[in-house]
Image (cartoon, rainbow, N blue to C red):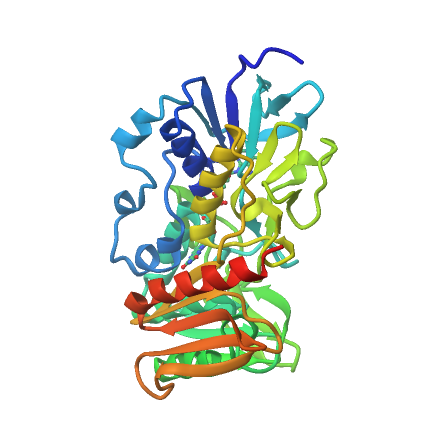
Length: 411
Ligand SMILES: Cc1cc2nc3c(=O)[nH]c(=O)nc-3n(C[C@H](O)[C@H](O)[C@H](O)COP(=O)(O)OP(=O)(O)OC[C@H]3O[C@@H](n4cnc5c(N)ncnc54)[C@H](O)[C@@H]3O)c2cc1C
């Protein structure tokens, strides 16, 4: 084995990558640290993109992931605007799109996910949302008043954007192919029904059980019709969204929000196991000296006794911290209580734990007809999940209870 004098290399400069870096330093790692990120500029937080940034209530400066003093304290070499293109695990080298080769003593893969696209003609005003630039483009196209926005996909992202776009005065239609209330499998039947009611009462049209067959453009539109980044956009603007029931929805703006795929294609020839993410053991190790954290990682959660991949902001930070400890020799299995939140209009929904298919659901505080309530999900009397509807202060106690419950079923 070579002497471990090479840097620790982190690929991906989002929440998971930076959490790993900070935790390495706070645990005493004094060696070289290199952080590679394909986006230009300092890392920022993503949850506000579909909320405050889109609605225009926060400026981009407010969503920096770390203040400058904490960036400086990392004493890291940042390599931005460059992609990792392949990995050689035998030579322990990452290859970059600018031709550089980065040898490493330990590598952290924290490359997140990217939005899935639908097959459609290249039309203007058809958006996805993952980056700050995406959010700014979407916001710009929603600013002329009364824009008709069609959101394809009624998941968390699609519905959050629907809420923010309503605040901007857009006419919003959400199209979700799965019948029933969107998100029922993620937040339970009661909260899902209440959420769709909230959206409808706020003027969002929610169509379920109907898919999209095609997007068509407006050949008559004046060209160029919109300026993006100073460049005239000469594509035809989208004009209609065609549905499986034969309807054609008029649209000025479309958001495609049909899920995401892990950014793992650059690892194809690496010999690592890639299967809906980078497959890791319970320590988040994907191979010798290689670790993964955040949205891209699918690791063996011993408490849940299965591999999981979570696209949750809190998980990115916690897993980054954990990976740092394990790189430095701790050998701790990572078995957190899954946790996420989602915001719609003035409502905050948080869910901790899991929501097993056959769970017994019970409202334990408040009632579902009111503005705040708490619902638990149990299997054979054991607590598995908790949903807080506008009750953020109560969540901590329930998360602690879930941690105990998870410890009891941990193998
Ligand atoms: C609009 C939006 C709203 C959200 N809202 C919520 C919410 O309300 N609650 C919640 O719990 N979660 C939310 N999330 C999810 C949360 O933001 C993510 O779980 C979190 O950002 C994941 O962090 P990460 O570091 O794993 O990935 P990312 O933040 O995606 O960082 C990965 C970085 O790696 C870079 N990268 C990718 N491939 C390469 C490569 N080959 N070479 C170099 N760099 C590469 C990417 O460009 C990116 O900068 C939201 C996400 C989005 C997009």
